[in-house]
Length: 141
Length: 141
Image 1 (cartoon, rainbow over the protein chains, first blue to last red):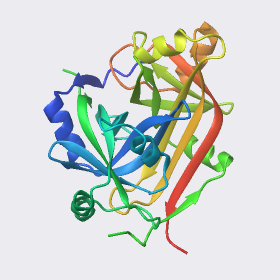
Image 2 (image 1 turned 60 degrees about the vertical axis):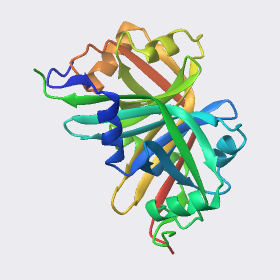
Image 3 (image 1 turned 120 degrees about the vertical axis):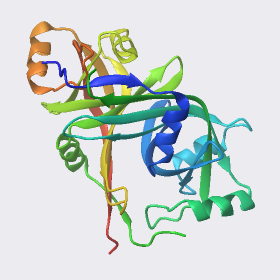
């Protein structure tokens, strides 16, 4: 039952980050009460870092806000995969995320990021990529 | 810069699981070398559980295979969100995942699941949902 029409190709880090920067939707992964947690968010690339906006009261804000200056480890995933053909790509970034509290930095991100719901989003989280991996699902040779 | 055109509505568990079962693509979240890991996979709902196929050599196989009979905790996410309007839904399931090794059980899943690449996929992972949450991003009242 294997599907011989799709081949998995590993992407270089720069190409993977470029693909991630070309879409606005991704999923952040972190730990909450010792359990893996994932939620969809909007992102933008700023100077090679991933910046997302979040609610002031969200678990993510607490997770990144309680970490020290270095931040808290998260994974961030974005993909664009055709549900019918299964062709596309997926990129996963692992790195330290820190809560942005500086008003000038926040003001800058506010102009770049469009939030997604009527809930107020007055915080931002900035993720510095330490490890970038990606695959492309494509035609066989 | 907030977007007053979108409202977040929490979904009941049954409705959330129904939405997840209506798509074939999701993302499994687990821990690898103490780091959060996420990867896109195909799934199918079988008797209320989520079944995915995976490569024999994948980290996920090791993660679920090394766990005891109860399985290993994972999160599973699926969504369908319009990148332009940001309307849609996202569902997150948390539960125990176990590696399926019984040949008859595997044969049954093989007929239900279409794998996605030329790599051999001879294992399946079955996730029993303990916690199902979901949101719908919709028009405001």
